[in-house]
Image (cartoon, rainbow, N blue to C red):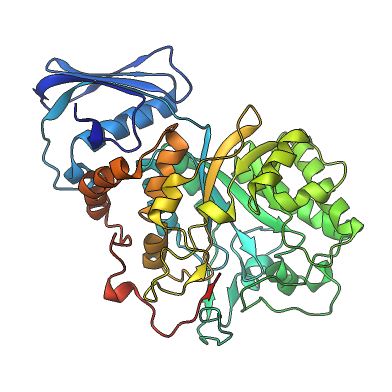
Amino acid sequence: MVFDTLLPRPVSVTPSPGSCPWPSTVDVRAASLPPEGYRLTISPSGVVLEVADAAGECYGRETLRQLAGPSAFRVAGFAPSPLPCGVVEDHPRFGWRGCLLDVARHFRTKAEVLRFVDLLAAHKLNVLNLHLTDDQGWRFEVPAFPRLTSVGGWRPSSMAGSGGAQDGRPHGGFYTSDDLREIVAYAASRAITVVPEIDIPGHARAALAAYPALGTSPSYEVWTDWGISTSLLSPVESTLDIFRQVFDHLLDIFPSPVIALGGDETPGATDEHRAFVRRLAEHLVARGRTPMGWDEVLDIDGLPPMVIGAWRDEDAGLRAAAWGHDVVLCPEQHVYLDHRQSPHPDEPIPVGWVHTLEDVYAYEPALSGARLRGVQAQVWSEHLDDVRRVDYMAFPRLSAFAEVAWSAGPRDYAEFLPRLRDHHLPRLDALGVEYRPLDGPHPWQTRPGVPGRPR
């Protein structure tokens, strides 16, 4: 077996000379291996896949597809090809290998979300954190509160870049309960858990526009700007009761052990707002789930054990672990894929810091130990108004992140780059992913004249 045909890197490879025919069937057997692990043996007599669990079978089959060459990633027209003989034994570094997809700022259709799930599976990522609500849109049907989607599900315009100008184009959409159940089931068949997020008590203008009584003003509009709104949910018992019902409906759809409730960027929050978050976290615990919050919730006294998404810096993750919480590291300084990919002026709508492909590949989590569940990349969508823009910003940096999440170091970018260029980018081509070329954007991927907010 040729070592550099695999991405992420395997734990061990034992090559054998010669090639083997494409198997008509794969002999799948249970084996004592680490969680999500597999052992793939390819010989002239056939393919044996030994697995720790159902996830291990998914990853072993994915490796088999990688070995078959880029044409195996096409949905039709794939002619079976010989496989290199040998043994691959592999298992992941982290149990949480996640990617957040923001469908609130710019809605992604159900078909587009299913496609994104396929792309996560192709990279052996196993968590899709689906950001369903924000100031700019509510994307989750709640039958008891229909105005959340009929009013909160669309806005009359969007800010064009970060310059303040509006594009005047209505934008909206939402998922029915059946849509979300389909997404959950589709992801589960690919060993991916969908972790839903409803953001409270801030990032809530869409909910406030639908039901102004949830706030403190007589009326609100779904926000057409980007940034941090000062509008917060009113932390009174009636609001808490409604959001308990909202989360209960969410729990009926999403079997994920972890449910995200936000808690971030709440200017002007009071002790009552902090108690509001704590009580909803306690409600999730009472329903048998583990709440997840962004690292600002560490300012709240009396929280139950939670999963903390450490996004502002990794020190927040260290504090969370010291205080008895589990941690997912997703620091803005390293793994925010909406940030610009180079300092070149042709980068479309440049926001944030420069996070090159090499920067993402070099990321090494500062936290270790039992409290670290894993790592997560973030695809925020303020400036990603269609699926082509998502492709451009996510790939191939998400491919580099997948290797960070799967394989322990040391890592060598000079070794990684030819594996990516010669083997993996052709797979993305076969999948129809409009990734950023290594030497810069295609002309049609630029956005001349649309201002960003670089740091």
